[in-house]
Length: 387
Image (cartoon, rainbow, N blue to C red; front, side, top):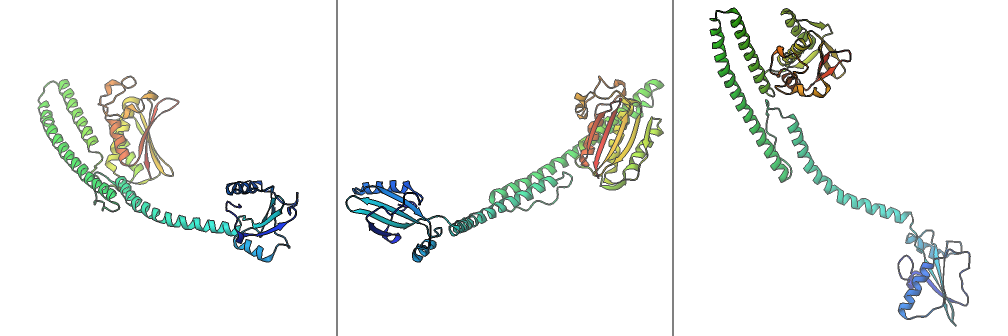
């Protein structure tokens, strides 16, 4: 046996000789072939003597026909295996057989077959994956671009049945979310109207109070109730702003807010900067900046406001001279109705909606708010907006 195949007459030549034709040292021995031959002879009930093997490389003495026969089968240079079988009393039986060794032709055939197999298997798989992934990618983009205030056109269902059902469910979800938000807006409008009407009537009646001190306190209380109502309704309406996006000069907008505080005697300064054209909702950004400045004045006595332009973002920095905020409470101050009484002046009033409303406004614009304690004292409230 050679290469795992039994010998056959057409694959070699058989000769009978008096002596062992295989030199003891010249050829490469293959004892595994001898072991397999002995096992096969034993299975056939044949008794033989010694079995010797030797691999003979191709030489000039090798017959041209035998060499061509080896090359046609992909053998390396027509190498042959010599097998010598001793038959007691009858001499030696010499068998010459081609020895298959993988060459470049066999390697090329294997690579070609592998490539064909990959093409046959991969092309349908890629087509199936693409048919599934494309509608899923469209669905992901539709979900990312969905805005409650602008539901847009429904996404056309396409793809496999399960994906079509998923797209249909997403379209139905968009309609339900839009309907719920419409109902919420109507409810907020009704609440605002129903609450402002009695507050306005109360404000008129307060004017009839004769005591000046009591009248002033009542007026302040009603004004605070109106501000609280405005903050709550504004926070609830965020996500569906009615104000359109507008190109504005951000530096001029911030400067105008600072000027409003100066007009009422607040200690607020603005660091002049170059013009910065931004595409945003000016009333909402003005509200966010105003809330930060109000906090700075209430809890830090004074405020310095500046606008810093970066490569990809624009920062509005409101710096106060207050005690700052404990690092472990930085995230808490953005929660609605949260006040840090241990570090803030309780007499300043408010219900803890200023920073929550400011962050909601900034995030709706694609930005973020950070609070940073300065090493020398004071707090920096930073609004970062994408350019």
